[in-house]
Length: 240
Image 1 (cartoon, helix red, strand yellow):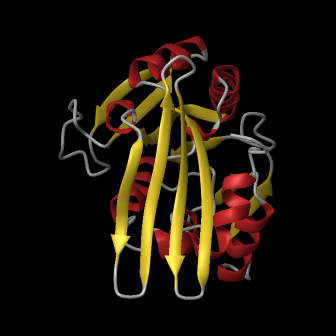
Image 2 (cartoon, helix red, strand yellow; image 1 turned 120 degrees about the vertical axis):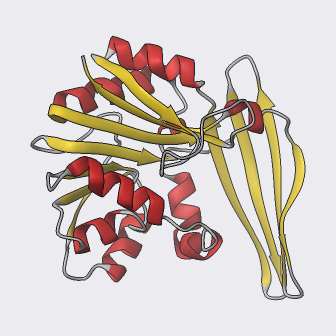
């Protein structure tokens, strides 16, 4: 995607991110991470506007969040003027943070690292920052659900139309999409580019980084199994 950089997604969507994801209720994610942390420090990769990180911090956990987008972090600061979440600007393939964490987690963020080398470097850095007995918890897309490409209607109402135009390159495993939002006051284009890494490939990279799969589910509550048509997998890794 021409002129698309690591910060492009966040820079273009930050002002409407919470609105676009208003139908997503993060309670299961928050409860799962809080349970895994057992009072320890938590790190989120791709903290965005803090929809998960801020409730965790308000629950009393020490929370650090990394994001490459200044606009996303600015929205987080608007919602968190007291700085409950330690916000760090940076590329989480380099993980510019200090200390160790009981839980490192990511919600649909690792696929935004479009190079497999970056994904592996991120997992190596995560392993370095995990406490003994710590957990890496990730939610990422099931590639099988997103490789079709084409045009979809994401939302339609009397005042707006949200379309998603996408294409998939099976050679590089690259998924590119444009979220087109049409309203009476104009048109917004919010692009996204992902590398659709499979769960099996994540397992292999995690092993190379010194981590092993502990369990995998179709939801954060661990009540739904991960199956072929699951929209996402929630995978939990522990140090080897």
